[in-house]
Image 1 (cartoon, rainbow, N blue to C red):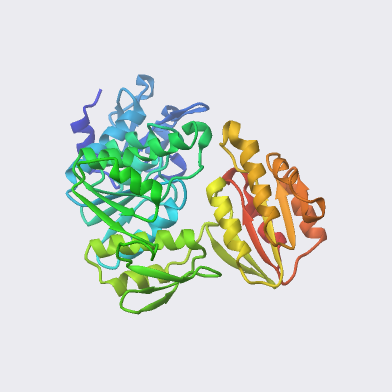
Image 2 (image 1 turned 45 degrees about the vertical axis):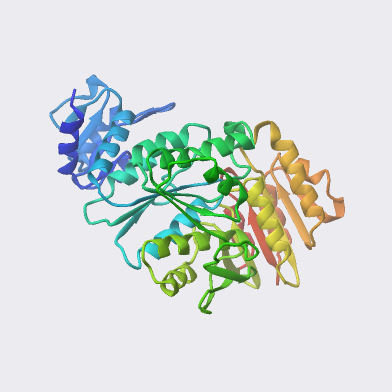
Length: 438
């Protein structure tokens, strides 16, 4: 059984860490993890054949040569190795979580800080108990600031992640109705996300907070021990300095900074302005000139189906299909309702992981839609039936699955229309894009 120190010495010989034999880099360290339906111990020898320098396993039967290293628990070894590596890195670690906007905010913070520093941020959505260790272990000695996104499905998840990456600075985007089933309701979300603030307070670290975000501001006020509380606001009515002021939120956010500079972004909606303001304030804290931080945010172009405008023939599609929960769905609908366009259509799919609140929350979306002014409302998924029940039948088309939706879009091609597409990740609603124009 190899010790942590010995394992770290082996890791330092390697080019990186992998948990997927399909993506083995030459001279990397492969961790054989187990799941409900797989046991990667059986792929250890294959990982070496594909170029890994070492393979880490927790099944003694998988040890067939001295390049296969035995540990008691593969996942625990990965997490402990990541934390050991973290302790060797004397650089700021900016940790962030929240119900909505985590990935976009992470990308915005990275876009800003990379103007001055060599940064490393969470790649894609590697933000869980496996992704965070992999992120930490990808940080080499050249990196000056790390930005770590942390996701959670239940209470205790963030606590586990902060103990691995030990953030020196932290930010919570918002508290909303996400993963209600796992968290046990909105108060559970508040407690779970608050585990980041717990760590920062207990370890005398720095927190960033938008005082216009009442839940997160209250959460900061409830805790003591922070090294610094860096506050700012996106609400010009509050007695706090505004770093940037939103001028318009649709179709794209435009904003000014306090010296009068004007910027147009590639993002839409007040919710994205709040993410942008956070990135700008964090950049300012780390010494960036305000116009430089603002320009970096303005230049950021979203991708991966997050608040992304895509031209399809004569249609303009707002593709926001990466994920959805009641908070983000309501914000997207309200923002789209305010968009000035001759014809507007929404395509909305089920919101998952809401547990016993699913029917009520989908019904609430239906009630919101009933108050909006859309030319067509297309709802898809079994849960969305609850929304259909509160909408006038002439306003809505309902499809139990997205394949029926595809067929309808083929039979009734849309033109000169602005179209919002949003649903939970499991719905995969980006599949409608080919049917929305050439």
